Image (cartoon, rainbow over all chains, first blue to last red; front, side):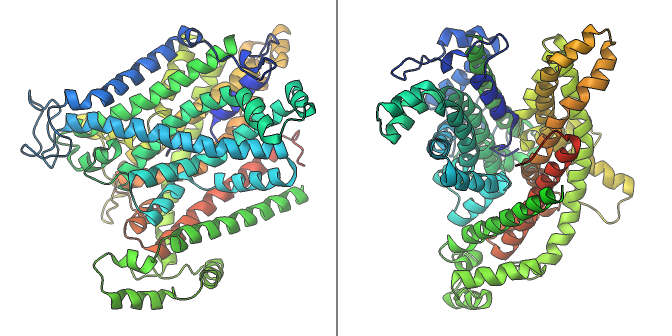
Length: 311
Length: 314
């Protein structure tokens, strides 16, 4: 578990489906490029022809709405302790109160912000780092490539959660440090995927054309190759946001996440654990919320993948 | 063959060497003062200075690393700052318990995951596939602490069948001990079953679409025979590598499960060390767990070599 499963099945599926021809021998659409290197993204409507993608997006939008509207919906502050401890659900407190008398519903809803902000941020940083390394590695080849790849191999054999624990112990628990450790942990596997995409793209005519035109190396990498490999990277990033959600949750659960009293789903599960036999909803609510976000992200990425294949 | 084994061993040594440097640098060099962080904010200057002296923190980092890694190679991981006992003794006891948990978990998850994946892959697109795929994607999307919490609520709270914590009790009978282990093992396995089933499904579905399976079916060989004789063997190579490469993911699961169920294994020892800034213990436990992961990856490579003679290594 934990955040990032480096050797997951999914990346290889992505590179396979997007890079090779499908059964009928057609090229998936986002491999088709115009001369300028611009790429047509899969149409939004294509994505939503898949029911699972639409469903996933609906769940996500629900949580985004909750995150944005948290101050309006919640009558209680997530950190204040206004009421008596461990109350059962009532009209005032729909999910009761926790062991410090805080409203569980408010903490759940405000916690959405933590997750929906930090997980994409960590993924974005990881993709930026991984994509740059992967582009360099795949395009330059030779010794640079070998060095980067060996480095990735070594980091990938390191249990991901242990990397997080080590880094957080070393630099301290805070929202920023959680983001840093998760994005660092994601870099090696993203590097690998991007590199394999670049290796396939490198031999295409448009790259040779650009090279013959005398374009600079960074121009070819950033303006020619990157737009053409970005489709699979986006699909992969979508799943990775899910991993980041789980990683943030795990760190919170282990007591190494965002420090209290900030509302955080993993932390809520950790704190509520002691009362699981008396008031299971304190724990079940954040657990279900967390899973639903990850499921939604997986469904969405499946939908995007399908859309890309079908066109 | 011998050459392949030797290169794999050499790679493993290099990997462990680099990882040991990484662990050391992150744990001891990056924080400003390990002694201060170990003793906490309220410790006196003298106490911190004494601990610095004791840990030899006044020496340059590379000398300390050399000492530490040579000690580790001899099996001496130093003395735990907090518990004041040799790290090795602490780790040995805990590692046995964790390995028990993980190995029984493996015995559950591998047959279940492979079976579910094969069923779904053979029935690609049919209702059975839909159900299995949905369940496995739910499992994949629930980290161990989520599925564990659900299992506790269902089996301990509602049904009252199984205990929700697994602190071992020396007085308890073997039956009682194993009863306490069911939920942690199930949680650990659930996490991986989904992953394994998804992976196997893709691999199986691909094999079922391949030309040689079509040929076998068209030749008139019964479908079950085609699946058992032709498809399975080729479809299972990929999941085998996948599960061995997934051991470092499983280790994360072990840490979480041990914390959730209060099971005193190596994962919880490591987390306790991290919480108390017990640097020597943290380094030792991390190194040992990482070694387990790296060694299992080497085993996976060797296994694939035997399973699939077509593979030729550069």
